[in-house]
Length: 238
Image (cartoon, rainbow, N blue to C red; front, side, top):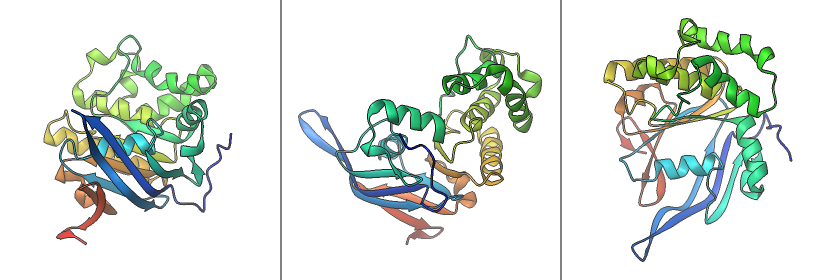
């Protein structure tokens, strides 16, 4: 299975992507023939209310779901043509996820939560301990390495989630409402942290949110209207 992403290819390339769900005996169209190019290093914000299709789009980009039609390519590799096992391996190596609900394992310490995805890639726990501690230092939590998630505040848990999403150095980071459970001030701190950590390593970040506080940081702003992607500027539709 090819896993090396091309430096010259767009990080994200969607071609004619459609997705619908069957609800109450009717087909609910979420995405209808969507095209999208996102280049390496871009920070793209996907705005929209709950139920507009933001999470569906992120699931397709992450290979967690398959489109009804069309293709999804990440770094020049068409993940829609991969089998389920190969998509899983590709996702582990090349895509980082940050969720609204943290998704930290409560029986593991902060450090162990960072080590786990690396272990799943077959990397040595001992060899990766120092890089994990360095990442925790970058998010200001190296002193909480041996703490369990239930001993952390919401903001601290989300910072751990950011560190875990970046620890394997993915080219693409997908963030789904990463500040949805945080107050405005803490949410802004997490957004600024995520922005700085991804930009300094030239990663591509696509963030789905209903919050306007990230708009000023974005290179591009998208929304989903009637199953179509629409690019916005600060004043409205482009």
